[in-house]
Amino acid sequence: MSRATEYLQHVYAVIEQRDPNQSEFLEAIHDFFQTMTPVFEQHPEYIDANILERLTEPERVFQFRVPWLDDAGHAQVSRGFRVQFNSAIGPYKGGLRLHPSVNLSIVKFLGFEQIFKNALTGLPIGGGKGGADFDPKGKSDNEIMRFCQSFMTELSKYIGPDTDVPAGDIGVGGREIGYLYGQYKRLRGADRGVLTGKGLNYGGSLARPEATGYGLVYYTNEMLNANQLSFPGQRVIVSGAGNVATYAIQKVTELGGKVITCSDSNGYIVDEDGIDFKIVKQIKEVERGRIKDYADRVASAVYHTGSVWDAQLTADIALPCATQNEINGAQANNLIAGGIKVVAEGANMPSSPEAIEAYQAADILYGPAKAANAGGVAVSALEMSQNSMRLSWTFEEVDNRLQQIVQDIFAQSVAAANEYSVTGDYLSGANIAGFTKVADAMIAQGLV
Ligand code: NDP
Image 1 (cartoon, helix red, strand yellow):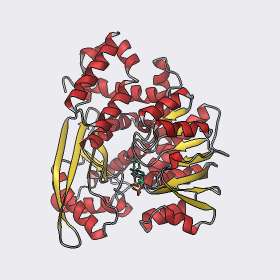
Image 2 (cartoon, helix red, strand yellow; image 1 turned 180 degrees about the vertical axis):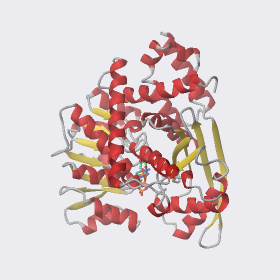
Image 3 (spheres, protein in one colour; image 1 turned 30 degrees about the horizontal axis):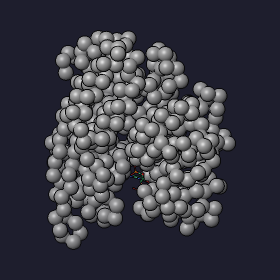
Image 4 (tube, helix red, strand yellow; image 1 turned 135 degrees about the vertical axis):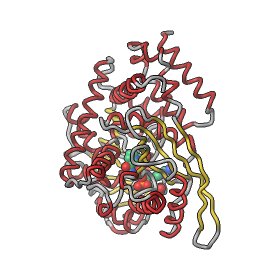
C-alpha cells in the first residue's frame, strides 16, 4: 500500500472513530478522500503537515437553544448550529438551513463542502454553515419572525462582516434573511456586510436570488460545450421547486433546453410542454404552496406522488436541486437507462456514493455540487464587495461576473484533472483544485 493510501485510510479511521454517528459528514469525507490519492502521491509534504486531519476538524462549532413562541402562545424549542469550518482564505461563509432534518452531521458535511466550493470561486472566503431543526413549513409569518429573532439573538455573538457571513439555504430565503438582518441590526447596529441574500432595498445584490440556479446551468453549459454538446433540444429533469430549481428551470429554457419535471418532498410534476418557471415561482415563492398546485393550473402537466428519480423518464440531462442523497444507486441506473448523458448538481451531495459509481461506470458527464452550484456563494461574495464599496452593480454586471467565475471554476477543474492524470473527471478536478488552494494557504500560515 502506498504512503498516500495509508495516510488517507488512517485519517478516515480517526474521523470515523471520533464521530461514528455523523453519517452525512462521513459520506462527504469519504467521497472527497476517494479523489485525493494522486495529490498525496505527488505531494508528500501534505502528509508531513498532516493536512487532512487538520482540515477535517472544524475550527469552531456552536450549538445553541432557540426558544420561540408559537401563535398559540406555547413555548417551543429548536436546536441551532453554526459550524465555522475553515478560515484559511477568508471569513467563514455559508448558508443557514431550516429543516427538521438538520443536525450536526448535516451542518458539518455542508460546511466541509463549502470550504472547497468557496476556494474554487477564487474569492477570499472561508467555509462555514449553520441552521436549525426548525420546520418553516406551515408556520405563520409571525412564527417565522419570532424564530428568526431568537436564532439571531444567539448567532449574532459569533458572526460579523469580517469574521463570518451567513446566507440562505433550504428554508431560508428573502423573508428569513430580512428577519435575521432586522434582529442583527437591533442587537449590533446596521452592518449590511453581516448577511448576504438581503433584499434589494437594504443592501442586497441584483442577481443573488438567481445566482445558484443560473450558475448551475452556466456550469452545465461549460460541460456540454467541452464535449461538443449544447442545450437546444435537450430534455432536462430538474428536482426541487425552491430557489435553486426555479432559476435553473428559467435559464435552461432560455438556453433552448426543455425542462420536463420539478418536484417537492411530496411528489413531482411532468410537463411535456416544458415547465413554466414563472408558475413555479408564483406557487413556491409567492403563495408558498405545493408543487401539486402546478398541475391544477397547467393542462399539460401531470402530478405524481413519490420521487422524480423513480419515474422512468427519457431525458438527456439531470439537475438534482432538492437535497442530499436524493439519488440512490438504483435511481441513477434508471436515469442511465432513460438516456441521461449529463448530471450536474444544484443541491449539495444529492448523489449517493452508489449513484456516483453508477455515473462513472456509464461514462456520464458528472458535475459535482461544489463546482456546479458555486454560483450562489460567488454572488454572495459579490454582494459583500458591493456592501463594502457602498455600490450597487447592475443585474447585467453581476450576471457577467457570475458567468466569468463559473467558466473559471470549470477551467480550473479541467486543468487540475489533467495535471493529476484524471482527465475528464470533473469531480476529482474540483476536489483537487479546491483542496490545493486551501491546503497551501493553511501551510503558509503555520500550524493552524
Ligand atoms: P429551498 O428551500 O428554496 O427549496 C428546496 C426544495 O427542495 C423544495 O422544493 C423542497 O421541497 C425540496 N426538498 C427539500 N428537502 C427535501 C427532501 N428531504 N426530499 C425531497 N425534496 C426536498 O432550498 P434551495 O433551493 O435554496 O436549496 C436546494 C439545494 O441547493 C440544497 O441542497 C442547498 O444546500 C443547495 N444550495 C442552495 C444554494 C442557495 O443559494 N440557495 C447555494 C448552493 C447550494 P419541500 O418544500 O417539500 O421541502
